[in-house]
Image (cartoon, rainbow, N blue to C red; front, side, top):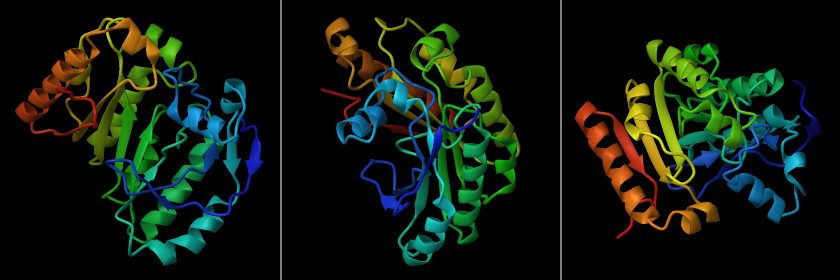
Length: 257
């Protein structure tokens, strides 16, 4: 597939306030995965007038001067940066978009040239070429279910769950550092499923991040026991990871009193 068009930006690298992040870059506007949780990035861009409707958000625009901006900004920031996240408001390996994938790999290579670690998260397919890049990089996928019907309903343009896991496992088997984001994890009124089956599927990974569903009235109104539910699931994550020596992070406000 082809991107909808090209835009230019005045800056690329910036420090994020996200609890497990450092610096980030977003070299695409929009995301064809079209997640319907709803998507925080879409809500944010809509609020500030960068996109108007969901259909517009699903037509990604590539930032054409990404590499030029990195050339200017890396020398100024490299002593401050611990890692760069790709990405917080888009997806660096958007499913079916080879041009976005190529730009993402080129950006990672440029950052790695100055020994800047990159932390990647995608609902697409992680390319095997990543195995040949900087050994400190961390590659992750979002995996909130194994049910393809749920994926088609909530992440209609994203890669299949099995495809994501297979691509992540290939990088793991090649010696790369890998991680999994189980967020936003759905409550039983959205889908009834077994968290353990998801955990067993990704038990090879180095780190698991777990978080609740936010910005969704279907959870708070449709499942009154959501606080107890997330407390129990967070503990299940902790017990699973401790038993297997997997690093973990439970997102803020997932566990409540």
